[in-house]
Image 1 (spheres, rainbow, N blue to C red):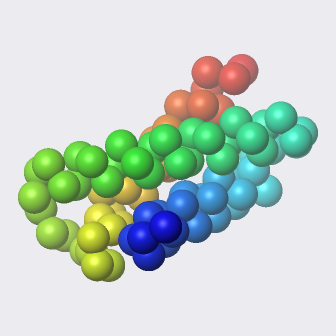
Image 2: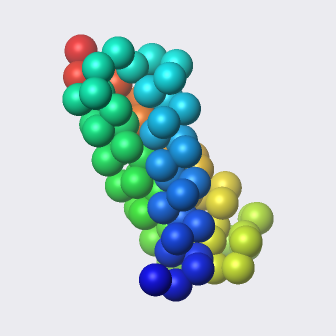
Length: 82
């Protein structure tokens, strides 16, 4: 597994776990938030690489764009779950 992919998965999983600690209650919600965070981070990565705006990158990982998309997906998942 390439290091940038591992870093992306770790950051996204951290976001999902933190969101679950803040707003989650059940194990099912943990899985939902982990999936939403990873999907959002991946979409943010793609958007960051397509846009070509190197706001803040760590290697090939577009931290700002991916984090914004990941947190957006988390709040949307929480909103749709209700």
